[in-house]
Image 1 (cartoon, rainbow, N blue to C red):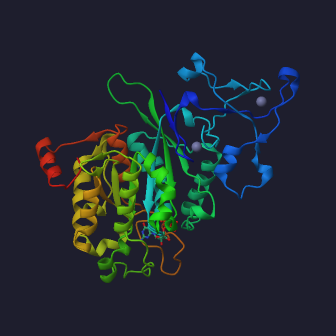
Image 2: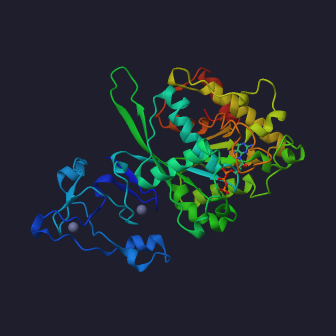
Image 3: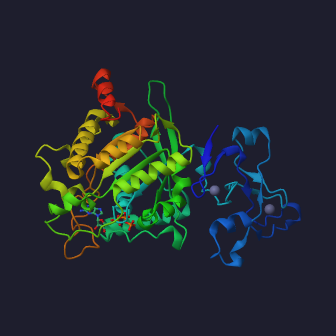
Length: 423
Ligand SMILES: Nc1nc2c(ncn2[C@@H]2O[C@H](COP(=O)(O)OP(=O)(O)OP(=O)(O)O)[C@@H](O)[C@H]2O)c(=O)[nH]1
Ligand SMILES: [Zn+2]
Ligand SMILES: [Zn+2]
């Protein structure tokens, strides 16, 4: 049975139970009178008091009938009980937001993206989507269309801004100032195996929390629902926020250092507290939601890396498989860099709080923004490094992309016992 998670309020429901919305179309059925718009209080409550009264009126919502076809999920359209005209629009049973067509055809996976203000979240999403459709998508035969008119519009806009106009994203709106829509994508990968046919589909929901929302534990409570629904979390850590990296003037080659924001330790400990309080499963005191900790802007760290650092090149993805040894090499490199920067405070805290943890290092742009135009991408356009690694690891854990492992199992286990890498 397909389980759908609402990307707006994160209510979880069997697809067959989702109500329908009448589109109020006049097609001559039952005397031809189309339905009138009605106040949709559930939706209006969700949208908040800024919604003008005229916009509270929407097509009537009616429950899914309990027929065999709807329970099996084979019936895409249902006639409205009032006007008789069939509709295929499904809505969330709690917040009444409309789901894009196709959203309810497959399970949803929420990938929560968390990071302090200016840690690089928006740039990362834009580049990640581009890479998943290009270089990485080709290796794994991934397709990633945007779902729904709103994501399609923003998807086009992000692509044009960054890749054509070479403009960096604007600051993300904090949730208090308005409603932040999630980005919805339909990820398709070919089924693997000798007799496998067709593709597997998953809905990916990226929700980019504005930096301001993470400033206090209280503000972060707004995002608790989202975090609690997440299948995996990508925590972006801006290395230019770490005291000793700033002191060493890692970005001496150009851009001035960004203002100091919420520390990653603070964000990580708030995250763990939120997940625990929302009953996310806990194993020996640690939260089990897989946690990818990704240090961003690694282009600014070149001076601190050895000549053979795995952070200087992309993973190969040969044969459409994720190379787990490569991931472990990156994991260890980052763990040692992070520990060096803050005497291991962040790593200790993360490892005490999260049972499934892996460190990543990525650069969305491949180079700092030009010193004379800090709102622009580098002149040559984004030249990303390893942006795909955290998401592919999360997908690999769920069996959505194949993973190649060569280290013997015993070695991996002893590594685990040392609290080093998740394997
Ligand atoms: N050197 C370098 N700088 C980057 C990179 N990606 C982003 N930046 C810088 O970081 C700034 C913030 O990036 P955003 O993507 O807007 O960060 P955000 O986390 O979405 O920020 P908010 O929306 O304000 O929370 C950009 O304006 C760039 O100056 C990168 O790959 N390398
Ligand atoms: Zn909802
Ligand atoms: Zn109707």
